[in-house]
Image (tube, rainbow over all chains, first blue to last red):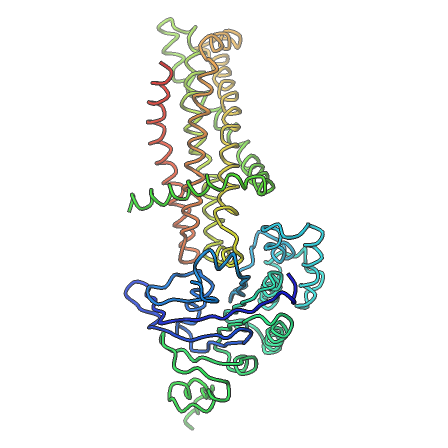
Length: 253
Length: 249
């Protein structure tokens, strides 16, 4: 597994529908993600972004429609065996019973891909890449939100993924840390040429890293385009989302 | 609802059985779970079984002495402890102590997306979480039962020796126990205990894996794991006893 044998994958989402109980959260969503691009799914909270991401990584099965990874259904075991995929969860989703080092090396250890000494070396290398050199023996409970996310990114890096999904990578982070995470997403793409899908409602991150952006609201894709095309859109919901800003109400004098 | 849960339990158990060839790969996790179960339970098992044997001797002793059957007391206590009381009560104890911990730990992992993270890494949660726990508890509970039998007999003997209404010495208690209790009686208890361990492990892991809804969901799963395990233990106890008694004839 090295950069040379990295082949990024194409993702196709076709007429995807998903309901939880009576509530339909995805109403026939369709889009394609080209190999090697950073595709950002942007939209307000509760618009179905994270559910969509879970379908792409195979954690949820669609009620109707399909998701294809290089032409094969995303939730099939064959896809998981054939393609290396990783997801950076909003909370980090580190295993609390393991140390940081064990978390980062988990994929290699469980699939017995390298010897323990080599795993230690890879773990140290990936932790250094995300600015957490020497954090191997810490436990997740000792880390801040930003550190947990960076450990989660290191854990994803170890897989050397062909497809990497980020769920709200900058939520709960301060602006400086959010910039670091954005830079990490870009440098990861440059290093591995992996296809990246980023779910976020952070406009700065979306326009900073995206090759293309999809706007999603209430389970529908409103628009797919380059950041420049999205910014030019006259769709009222998109404009509202892109220009919303906090302005304190004036107290009557 | 009950049939759906039972179906899911059987599927989980079957998938765990299918994963048995991977056991060597998970040996470290099995050992960790095994020592955790042992460390957490051994003292409680000893205390509980000491009193089980003691109470049994206290309840039956005076009546038997009164009817001139004091020579059989060692055998009665020995049989009751190793065939029925120790297997069932130790299983209930382990369901409360270990089953609840399993359901809480796996439930917490489910709620905080740790299990989703395993799946995205193509790590099967049944292999990673359920297999080591089920194997560890299946070894640990029968081993704890051997301690429980020995300490339970000791408890019965101590009460018989110290209670003035009974007044049977250690020697005559254990002589009678050795005459009556056979290896197959101990094996009878061990078979039951092995089955109870599988029930506790499967029920607890199943409840943990299907946990949803945050801390309240974890609490609900723990309660269900313990209650369902105890129900399973008692139902299995009846049918296993029936089956084993038939086989012994």
